[in-house]
Length: 371
Ligand SMILES: *Cc1c(COP(=O)(O)O)cnc(C)c1O
Image (cartoon, rainbow, N blue to C red; front, side):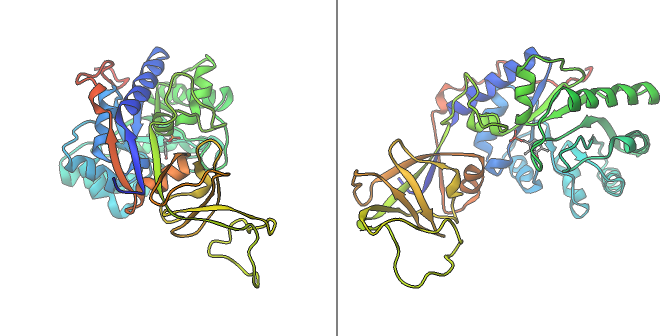
């Protein structure tokens, strides 16, 4: 088999998706499965759909187009504000997009008229993480203008936390989102079917069994793929942590001094400088580098550790265990390492264990919309 490669256990991804959909359903929350970390790879997207998510979500229109070309007809939402230069493509391939700017909404409306379609939108609200979002004080006005746009259907409001500043979803900010939804519905006499609370970092808040309020939708990526919540990166009980593993191949294994010699200047990536004693130690090199993976996001097997990396070389410490040239080493990945490995053309993707997947979704997804 080729290396470096990602082994993607579709059965485990299915299990993780199924559990999350089931747990959220019990709280009245429906799930969109976020596909951006794997470039919208249709094989994975299909598995997540099979598990009963109500829709797929991706931040890149190319990934959405890829899924459409592969024949995926489910609801797909664009979860990053559309670029003005891409509104035609957005209307053509995405059912819904998240938005914060009137110029963009106007352009989407024009594009939807031309395409003879209705394009759904969620308005994103700023709740403190300082990434995308309309300031709460301006929301009602934006809603009013949005609902007047032809061929645009306002489906609700949403928020995203923990991504830029690490602000955690809690009772205060989620309560505010619920209140904003209720307030707008009352004053404008409309209904907002979707109140989308956030991403995998909302799971802790949901699991705590707090008052969910109006939140009835989450967009989940990392928790499905890695089985962890992103705030403390703690494992989520009942989910697989090793659905995706990375394999690299040994190309050098030699006893070398721990300390470099010569005149010391910057290294290629100015990573942690190599220090240590002159004592010699076994050093192993794998044919995988910064171009393929975020070395800081790799979890080496028990007893091994990652020492350093350059574009194409990963230097690891294997203790006293001498690995053969050509031998493979297996790693688990964090989100950052996963994102880079999934998007590197040098890393082969292989799929296993797809036979456990039921052909009929156990929890057929449905939007929290009155039918
Ligand atoms: C990436 C992203 C998500 C998914 O986040 P995870 O932490 O992977 O669950 C959800 N919403 C938005 C807007 C995103 O950009």
